[in-house]
Length: 411
Image (cartoon, rainbow, N blue to C red):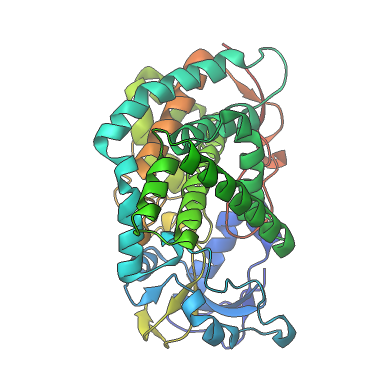
């Protein structure tokens, strides 16, 4: 990792680099170096000049700032001025279509987000609790005992995938295929692989939406189709919003896998949860604080000058914001590198913050807690097949996701 150490408040004059390899082998040590170096650290990322924001108060402030924008399409020409390799001025920046509320700001974001918000009402979540428990029971019952099991593939992926596919009206036979495409789209370090997976997901979604127009059902796909037919969604918004909900709905698979890994490495904390299983859902907040799904959120754009920790960042700059670094900031959390199910996690940023906070956070907590509680109540003496340092993580800078989690189940 190439980080030029400076005293607090000073800005390095040279661009630093945060290497994917360092984020895989020592993510929190790597992020701590950036956090300790400067409140706003200028770096080169994927060929672009950006500012890394890593301190808790700064990350929280920036994520809530309405002048810090997620919509890079509207500003792509200005953004390309930050490209350090002119011949790659970026074909892979989107060009106006395929934008859901994830990629919008202000009124556009609010309008699109509100249209799918009814999926995550308290009443709907109450309906999904028993379904989540039945599914967790089915998946856990199917796991072989006495031979290697991959918790990431055999529990986490089908748990999250089945729930979101049922909500969207997708045949559950497609779970594995879609989960693979989603994983490639959000974790692959290779642009062509990301684009290929995104294209496949959009094609699949368009085909399914066309089917639902012919054969409507009681699912989110049909609901979105009706909104489109009423003029509330454009064709691009319809498909992109559908894909976003699908991708976001696969997110709990990351938390389930990472959570199981964390609990297996902290047997005393797992024992506390097993002594009172009602605490599992609260513990998910500590799990996603301690092992955040996202090292960084997708880049943001400053539409006006902002001040970050005494550093003024001009308008027209790209920000690389790290909830993972913020969640390990010792200026906000005591002993942040310790996993502690008894700690207060109030204010953690594991589900984001501000207008773009995860819309499905509560559903994700239900799925994650249900899967982990069911697994460890059934098999409390489960063991990792490999030393923790030999467990493999997916490459890439943004998502913190296990490649696999091989274990032996023990009751």
